[in-house]
Image (tube, rainbow, N blue to C red):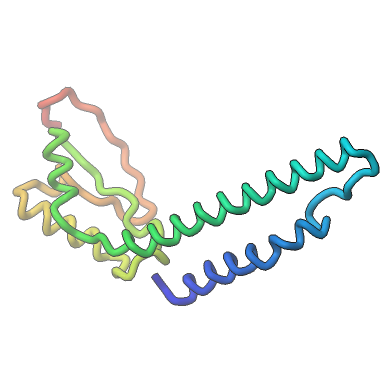
Length: 148
């Protein structure tokens, strides 16, 4: 992950932590009413807000951790193995390059890795391919086991 993106995520997390106490100063919450019922509702609102902030921060931390830990998965025989396990007559690699900032690999590396896996598995290019950026294909369905 790029250092600039990590700094941006950390800055957003810090901003959330800095602004959280402002909620108790009625900056983000409605003013307390004059009656006991209004004050009870205000207290419940603040409790809900604080619980929501804690849950939000926990989810964000897990998300950032997951992005950093699992972003480096590259290559491997998974794609060709999954195609084989599904007994698919044809497969198309998807989503390479969708999230450019979450990987250190060059944009054209996943299609090249798939081509190597395809050759190693002995598959023809039309049996497992990757579409070019912006490419549209019309897929004609076939019966199971039938070649087109």
